[in-house]
Image (cartoon, rainbow, N blue to C red; front, top):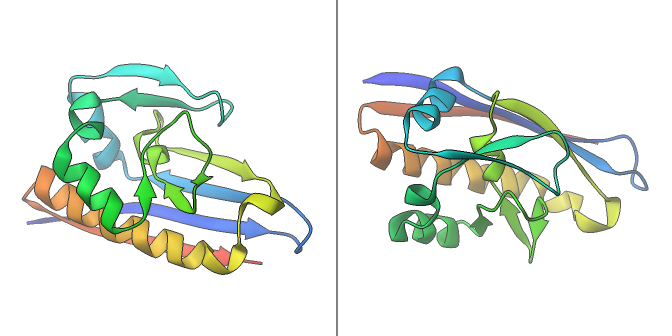
Length: 145
């Protein structure tokens, strides 16, 4: 069984009145899995400069949707990073595997940032272990204020 350190992600905010920046980096092995699937590419209108693997076979999958629901997540590259108190993990499918997303201060309850990331990592692990049974997924998360 192969172990992949799949994700490095962090929220960073200079002070309580400033915007928060979400930084992420996806392991090349994860991006390769997406790139080898039947996909199209799309640009995000909400996250400037980021393009995504558009893979309806995943995003429309009932099991995947159930995982997202259980962990209070969404996967929609056309939506905000936080929508209806759910964390958006579409950044996982970013072409190039890394980037940053600025979040207005009013949109993120910073006390929930750690919870968002922990839930995302649990869902990512569960998703990839069903998608690719031979993998163990690890993640690094940081919340800095």
